[in-house]
Length: 212
Ligand SMILES: C[S@@+](CC[C@H](N)C(=O)[O-])C[C@H]1O[C@@H](n2cnc3c(N)ncnc32)[C@H](O)[C@@H]1O
Image 1 (cartoon, rainbow, N blue to C red):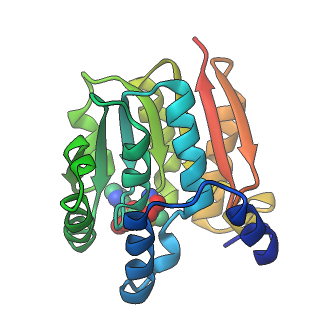
Image 2 (image 1 turned 120 degrees about the horizontal axis):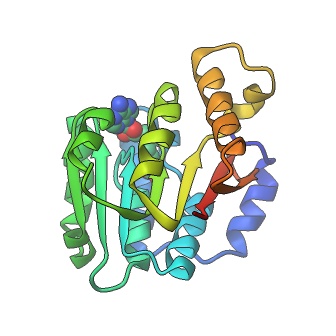
């Protein structure tokens, strides 16, 4: 899944802010017990999320795709006292695992989990606005997450989409996921209201700012 060679990624990790003890434990346990531990975003994408939360002063975050809770906790660490995160997650097992980690820290009080297909959960948020959106769920729905998420994002807000290079297959997309990711990138590029930056960290991270 990674675009950069492992040695380069390890070097970047070595010279970046390290995970807290709780996040290290969550990562180790996820790799030991989950069928698809590679879904965990990890400390470089997580570090970028934290940095964006801190420098943007985000208070209200929406996450689509929570898994065992790594990225939610990583962002929660960067939130101010009154900050909150709404997390959408489909699989009950992941919700139970993530909640068991959230319960180990006061930061967990900032996180509300919404069970079920994210597209349905988004209907519940129609009267809400968010400062920051992180999308990391089923790739075929990325175009919808982008369109729906953008309408919930405040002007000046930031959106982050993980796996936007999909192992490089977006260059000549042939499967449904690569096609959807390419479509998402085109939608973002062709929207004058957005300032996008596609970064080749891990499997590709698209960041955009909603400028008006
Ligand atoms: C790549 S993982 C998320 C990783 C997480 N953000 C992290 O950094 O550890 C994708 C998650 O999205 C969830 N998911 C997949 N389809 C979904 C859907 N339609 N609605 C909500 N969650 C979904 C999966 O169950 C999985 O837990």
